[in-house]
Length: 267
Length: 267
Image (cartoon, rainbow over all chains, first blue to last red):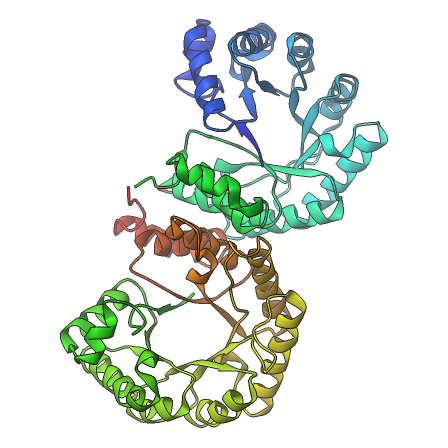
């Protein structure tokens, strides 16, 4: 399971001033907490500062985080003018978060994904919008995989995001995404799926509980990556437990390690 | 989701003396706790006392529990000599737990299931044993459904139990059962599936956590009944949350009610 730590996003109240004021200590701490909690990628998003300031701030985030931690960064922007300079500074294999089937976005980000050999999140959206139904999600997923691989992007670098919508809006939205995950994973063996987990609980109370359970349900359908807050200890305990139950943890070694490390018994 | 409360089982340390000494107060309290926590059926098992004493003690359990609570009992025995008199005392629709494809068991319990119109758990076991592989579980499930319905048992009274084995024994046992649940539910629309939840975690530490997560994974595959301890508050919170995420809780009403009743926030 690939965990993308979502916390360093300038749309969040405590992150915005830290990015704006280049508070390196705070950002380094936020990155460290997430890595310690199990993040494979640290997401970095400076999109709220607008197209003029975003490139500089995204570059500063990459340099600041990688200056103190050995980790990979998820460059969270649709803006090639921000991603390209950040990629040049980035050490190791980056993740571009995200491409989609929107023509302008696809055409401008594809060369960066391909030429830098990055991982890429491929959102199920196109010029007509962001579909909520299974058929259109699957249609876009198929076209994305086809076009990306035809352009030379290895299948194993692609993380299809079927787009999670709040179940408070329509009570079928959860099952539609679960079905999409399974169909994408079985339809394109070797591809990955990723979700922005917390969208599912928007508009409902006690969102942690919904996020924690949806993660398990999505893993049950084959999900192998997610953007989430890894400092939610119960969520991460659930990921470890579900991995064991789903036969992805031989001899339950990681489960037993987590138990010995006090990471399961959280009451 | 049909919840069968498992606690009144004479193989449990605190239950055995209460049954033996006919401690009605204790049994009534155990039943009440489970009903309060959401049990639809209260399981009653006096099997450890042997074939001579079991019928009398099972009858005493039925009379004691139904004398104080409006509830239905899961008559947990393979022994028709215990089930038949208990059924005569039972008010309302009982559950027979359980029939299987073992010839003697099937032939002796079928008339009771059919003539009393009970619900019935149908275990995926036959004269060759209790298979751990998907193919044989499905073969037995199919034959059970076929033979029971041919004998006049309505499909909606049948709860197929694919038999959960500990993942500590073989790390594929979890996924085999999850696949079996989905195949049985889609193969026989209208039938139910039920599992003895806690078997999955046998031999591993912090079993609550494994049980809680496996319940969610099984619900994700269509499970609609389980034998479990409903006084595990987090387990029941997970059932309510998973129901909402799986589109089985219109407008998330039960989730919102549970939240307002303080049943979700358990830290």
